Length: 171
Image: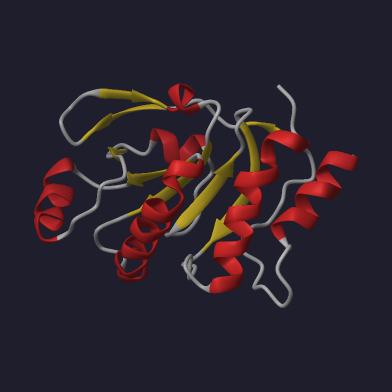
């Protein structure tokens, strides 16, 4: 219970910050997923244990998703060295994603969930939808809808999550 309260406080660290994440009433392991990346290689979420992961569900037909992806790229560039991993899970066909990407310079991992298995496992209801997974592999929060990830208060929240996550949650 104390850990859950600490996570809630951590997520709302910055004064007057918009609430980015909704915290779960019980902290549980994130659902396991294994999907293919853009080069058809199999990717497993488990390989990112020990890092803080933003698992972001999006689609090429979702205009707010397309506006948010550059924000996530910027966040990834600023915080990757501190242990943040951004994984964009496209609820789309590889063809549609590949047609969209050539004009973009996204360097974070992009996985394809064309048939919606990961979406069902994570109970994705809207796009975009982002899940915060702690270093210990537990689901710490959910962000519904598009967020301004680089807004100063939101960036501070992400920095603090990276700084304190391992101190709050033990393996």
